[in-house]
Length: 89
Image (cartoon, rainbow, N blue to C red; front, side, top):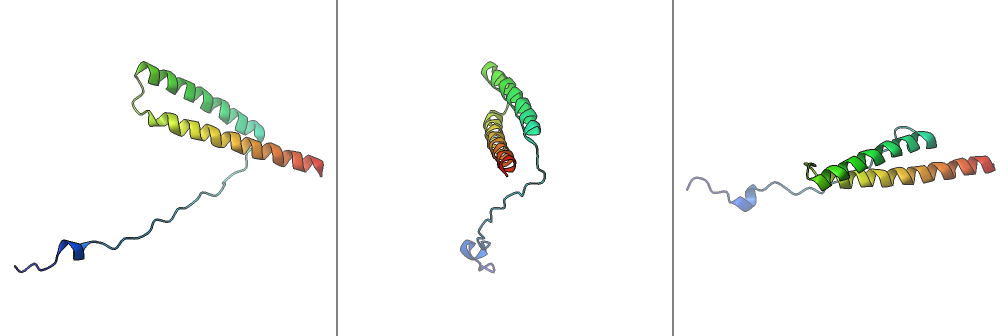
């Protein structure tokens, strides 16, 4: 009977998570982005093959790779448009 604290009073206070975004660390050219895209597409193709044959241990890799490919496509579009704007000036 010496311990009079309850479970409700012993809980830690709830804190709200803060989402932190990454700042761009380096600017890549369209050629560099294209090379990176080619390598990611090859890795994704190999991962999909492995997944179909049942050899892929972590299928979540496929989702991560698809998202990286989509981000690269977006970065390439932004870079191409930025170059077009520079040429117009």
